[in-house]
Length: 308
Image 1 (tube, rainbow, N blue to C red):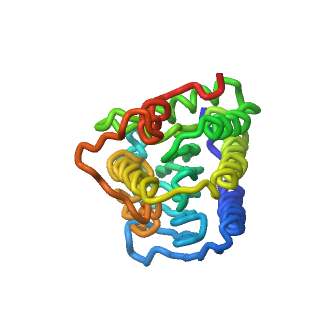
Image 2 (image 1 turned 90 degrees about the vertical axis):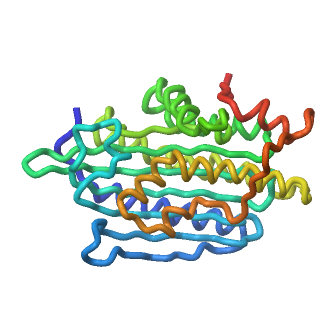
Image 3 (image 1 turned 30 degrees about the vertical axis):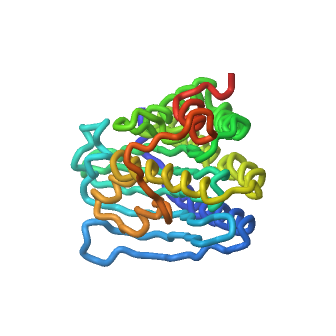
């Protein structure tokens, strides 16, 4: 049962602090600080509020990385937000969250996505409804089983204090969500994904969301540090661009966060910060059997139980 009273102030403060911590940690690893771009919606638009976009482009380690914090409100939930709760369609809303994508320069360093968010839906004369969402997932160009196991282990450990069923449940949800139906392949090696979550009550659900957000640096930084010096050449960069094309396809066709932002009249530059700096498409290209490029498809781009 959703609680009728709750305070969004600590959620907002946590999210703002999380953005700062991640930007400082990855900026220090790269040697290039993130640039903060604060923005505010103009008066009179259908979406109110603002946020801060932290961006790093053309770094030594991160070719393009963005960490966005936003806190916006509107008079009617967009269709993507009420798709699984049609009874909330038309309600006013406030949505706040941190969303990030890192596209490293070295093809042996995987792309990563993480998001944690909090939404409330309001209607005059009725108690507000809240829910949390988020997760993180890893998208390698070249697959390393030890990296996949490490990433999933950190995800599992972040959720275990809140219920032994959450990791397998959110892992399966991630595999099903980050799936390119028109390609018949997963976007990467998955991770965890959850949405419309309030079953633990406000305080405990908030603690779970914080645990996921706090786990991100533990999940990703060791992989970056391990792979950043791996040699690569034009072949690996070309394959990276090809795989980034798949990333673009998913984000523009299926991603609920992207669609929510565009449907609600959000800030386009912030919504599309997840796009890679360079991507390419090849007509009906297939990797040679037995190559690392072929191994990505056969061994990594399908749901697996990484912690067996």
